[in-house]
Amino acid sequence: MAVRPPWTFSFGKSSILSHHFKNTSYMQIQLDNLVPVPLRDKILQRSSDIWNRQITFTPGSFIKIKAPSGTGKTTLVHYLYHIRTDYTGQVLVNGQPWGSYDKAAIAAMRQEQVSVIFQDLRVFEQLSAGENIELKRVMNGQPYCTAEKVTAMAAKLNITHILNQSGRTLSYGERQRVAIIRALVQPFQWLVMDEPFSHLDEENTQRAAQLIAEECKARKAGFILTDLDNDSRFAYDIHYNL
Ligand SMILES: Nc1ncnc2c1ncn2[C@@H]1O[C@H](COP(=O)(O)OP(=O)(O)OP(=O)(O)O)[C@@H](O)[C@H]1O
Figure 1 (cartoon, rainbow, N blue to C red):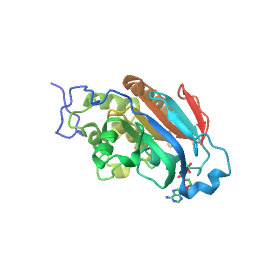
Figure 2: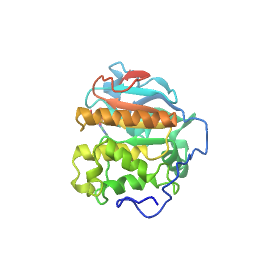
Figure 3: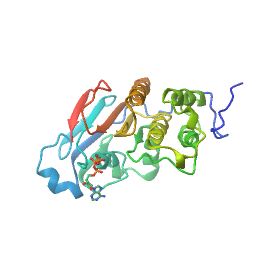
């Protein structure tokens, strides 16, 4: 009999690897002359590969968006995940503006099609590290991956020893690894990541990048990653300067 790790919740089936895609067509994300209102004047004075352009992110692509500090990486990630809307132009999902979907449809897309690693990590402090991950794993009732898989991911990212620790006392590097695993235990076709390795040393960065690449390939998913500098951590399909 499989032994349930102490940090898992008691609900949900843990032994199956199921596929949740209700819709087998891949989620398409497009930008149509997107310009953040607060940055409008600055952006229109310089050239950008992203702002104020027509962009189609090809499903399954590994996409890097590079930009210096304070030029809008987090703003873009929040637009892509539809938690900020202070822009002109449009973010189109499957040809329709994000804003045209109702709350239930947006919630379903965030559960099944698009996952995110926020720059501020958003680890729930009232839960343990393991519970933060488990919350996402069982979100759909029928878990996408097994509890054993989570144990293996935690070992790979060297955080097995903190799974029972309160989110409140985790270091930033530990929080970042929890947030990475949490984003990988749900189904997705796009993974959106905002400076996902900013608190990690080189070894943990390499391990995390390898895990992310494996998980994306297993799903035939793409990612959109923002960062400050050039890197060769992934075999990127396309680079943009923000
Ligand atoms: N809601 C907002 N209203 C007005 N200005 C904002 C808002 N959010 C961010 N800004 C400003 O927009 C600019 C871009 O911020 P953003 O956080 O997107 O940059 P970033 O590229 O992610 O920065 P960093 O590399 O420092 O994380 C900053 O000058 C910031 O002060």
